[in-house]
Length: 178
Image (cartoon, rainbow, N blue to C red):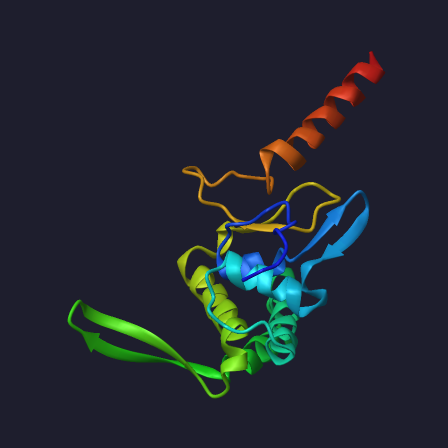
């Protein structure tokens, strides 16, 4: 159970993007939730991931975050190799349950679990709607989101934060010109 509240300005995104959002800017300074296992515990709990907040899990999760960061900036042979290196530590086992077909994730080392789940989630998003994986349009924001708006035109990580800042900035520029 995490011992501190989640300080991030944007939560609730799919696990891959939520992992990217463990780094954010506040007043021009980059913040990082995953500097220690306590921050990892906060992230794991926020995503309902039942893994221990241990150093090995943190190390592997940071490797996945770096690979995902590179992937959202553009797919290249290097980014493919980095994502595949994380995915190599797990697999999906198909099974039949009393409720019907199911999938179970299996890991060669459980400390890769959160990293693997985030990388797999990213592949699912790419398969579902790659054009809806977005970075916030505010120039000072480094957060990412999956656009679930009906018309697919969301631009800001949060209308209350970045959207309002952009609107206020445009308004100020217009009134200054007048």
